[in-house]
Length: 298
Image (cartoon, rainbow, N blue to C red; front, top):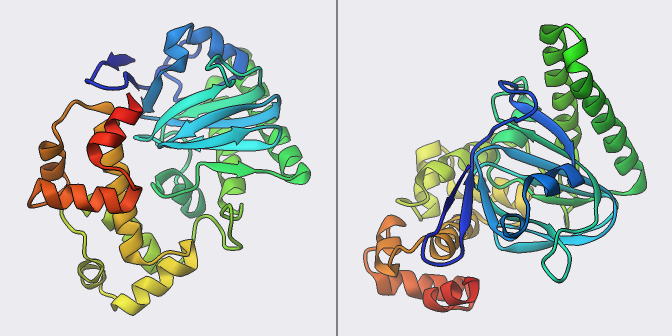
């Protein structure tokens, strides 16, 4: 873990490390365990992870932030923070840690087996970070996480290789349950199986800083623009162009809030030919100028 003071809001760049099971790319702990690990001001700061962070809330309330969106936490809340995202841990209104009873699972992308459905959960940079589960789903997830936590705790007393494989399979079961959850606010599944949309997701993540026209993506992937838009709208309710602009805007927010790069440098990094074009784009997308957004975050 390193903390980088980059001009505006301090951000903690946190790499994966398991202090209780060195070498194991999975950790299961409770919310109070995490609070004890991150004392004082460190807890309140924004973190950027290079691993996955699952939280299932059983009791208590608070507010978590993932990529500049606040999410209310209460019994049944499921949070999934992915590598590269910025987040602030659940807090009370005064900024102190929430009084949550929650199970937390930390793992790296390579730990679970690479099944098609679970891989989409792991690799999807656009997957939802928040679900509010109903009582039935909450109970099913709670039992699944309890099984994972039991095997994790018993690891020193069991055959390590067999138990590690069991942990991988139990985690995959949890990821498959996530894969079949509906996207919040829509009736479609969170991880669409349509091939055009899946390919577009990966290509967008690779190319958003240099390619912002939807028809270029369609041509590169071998689809018509109509087919690509239909797949994107079915999966997310948004057109390909809207998803491209949203990804560029998110990256701009991350750079503005957590680096001291000048606006002109951010503009260049995101593929804009002129800083004024970037400023117009950002203002249109967010309702704030880049400078005003940066000042608000600080």
